[in-house]
Image 1 (spheres, helix red, strand yellow):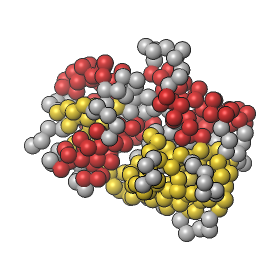
Image 2: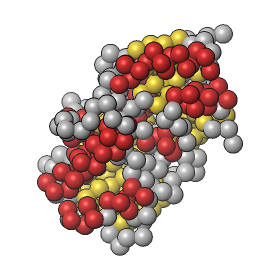
Image 3: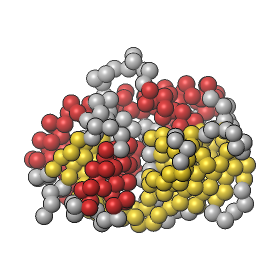
Image 4: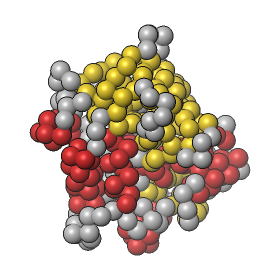
Length: 317
């Protein structure tokens, strides 16, 4: 029987994962058992490693890293067409998907779930979009896909620029605070976007939005509970649109966005849909797309739910 494979991104959490890997490996050996490990060297490696392992009949593949690593591993599994279970050993900046499924940040508790947890069958999103090279491309996502402010926030987080933050402080500083500062900068400097959106078989609608989210899971943006009612196995996306509030209102309501109490706001729309098509109102506009905390390309894009597509090891219920 093939040993479980741990795909580790040593660069996640600003390189902290690579530094702490010996401790994580010790916890795994002690509380989980034997395993294989492969380290990523560049973006895309986790997807390739996961697909290769799945084809070699590995039955459990564990992603060690942040949301980007988890998403890549999931894409590798899904692309392989094999029945493989995804495990999560969180060590990243955002940690949004693990929040939705209840995986704790502590290594020992997370490893215990890998050993004792139950399998949960979840939906995934599939998006067809335009890549940076101008090619129509497809990928899957576990958490949230979005456009508007969120794409620029993610770009700011990835570029860094918050050098005054404590390097060795709690994960709060490298995660939620980094996203929060980037959100502040983006709200002040970036205008709303004009798009044409169609949900399922409804008529197209022209919208001006600060942000538009297609949510399979509940969290994005380093802990923002953007889709508080989202369920991972209901066969539908939660679609959240935030109107053109202006910088002051966005900042004033940021606590409501993080707490998940924003759906009652007049400028926030909420709907359920299985398929969403989105394109810029002006075909010359370039609107970036954010998917599971990554920036793979731009609109136009088509988002579709894929029910019961992936097995994930979660808390026993």
